[in-house]
Length: 199
Ligand SMILES: C[S@@+](CC[C@H](N)C(=O)[O-])C[C@H]1O[C@@H](n2cnc3c(N)ncnc32)[C@H](O)[C@@H]1O
Image (tube, rainbow, N blue to C red; front, side, top):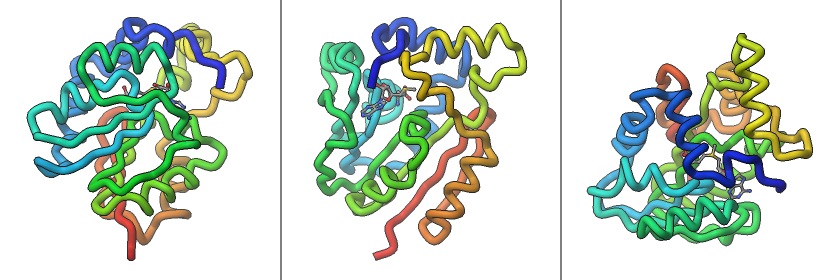
């Protein structure tokens, strides 16, 4: 995957997230963390530089592993003392963990996002947590904003213009994982799906 500008610059990425989420940027990590039990193990796929751990999990005595493809993000996460490895999750060896989490990254796995979720379900002894934006700058009604967002997130191959809407996310989840859905929580800009493997 060619990397977009914001995935090379942790500062720029955080700035864009702050524009998108405002004050909720940190609060949302706390909300997601509320679905995770203290002293459990968590694997976070596409973890960026680890802000979920930093703002949501740090005080919960979590055995944490983050995976991300961006060398710059991983470098930043390691600098912050987090347990993060640089790897494409498509090649990841899915070891057992209490929780598998993916935040704001499912769109990268379009057109078959269900494949990665199935792998997460098989490896999680507890829940799988998928958090995906349903409102984003790319879908903004203001052309200037959507164009700027596309420019910053462009990977150069035109593949990353897909984003979920609430409808397309719900449809995909219902079609593939209806039996696995434990809980769905909607916030202003994203949807949190809690899934469980039916063994
Ligand atoms: C929108 S960012 C979300 C980062 C983080 N989860 C957050 O909420 O701040 C998407 C992340 O997915 C990573 N990514 C995309 N495709 C990936 C892949 N195949 N394997 C690992 N990481 C990937 C990117 O490097 C980027 O850090």
